[in-house]
Image 1 (cartoon, rainbow, N blue to C red):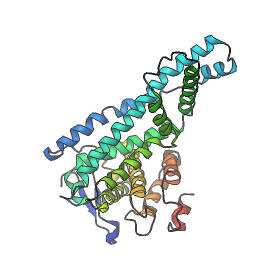
Image 2: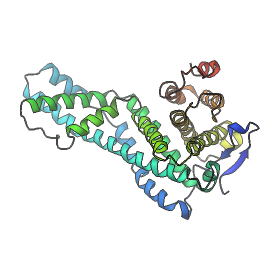
Image 3: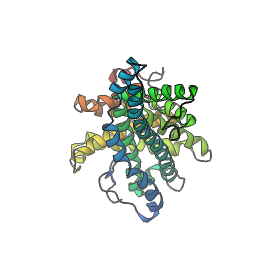
Length: 324
């Protein structure tokens, strides 16, 4: 089983087995190679996307001056000149979300196929499991940065308003070719979401299940619940946590745990919070609460505000109270 070590079998079989998965060092085997190579091309660009988003300053000052001085053509041109390249960046972020969706589709196809059980997939295909985890880690980090940067929606709104005004006045618009009206509509929907990348992955996972009607839904949901269990055990057990070479792996595991919970909650008919869920929600929330508060507030908010079933009547009062 290589670096994937079975560390615990729950007495409650519904909770499923827990594993220690070496997220730091897993390398693809020959059967994994084709899918791994496809996904790796996408993941190579993920770091650059996050760096660009972190450095995104916006054109707030130029936009304010242009709005306050509507008859000053110089200020209008200055604001437009500042916004157009920024919208080019926003377009790249959006296009990356489409590539990420395709990568997730490939990984789900590999990790949920009927030739192995979900647990066997994670045992045999550690490198693909690691890539799946890397997509979730990127997604939560992207959405955290986006949520704390109101300039993104302000810039894009100004761009669309100005573009519409230019069309009405028959003024040729530099930048229109790069983001046409149809693309602008799709980008608007994307950036209107509080957590756009997570919404993309949730929709993609739901779509994967609906498109693969011959594949039992449990193959997908059990893959997600097992991954959540893997992360929980590694985080709550000092012996296993001490194996991490980098402290960043703690943050990585927390992000992945929350990401798979949210996906599970969208894909499973009754969600992650019901008693019949194969995810130990109390245990997962406790792991989050045991971390320094500043480091997990964004993840707790993700469970509060981006899950589908938290506020259902079937969710226990204890779980709701833990997320207050």
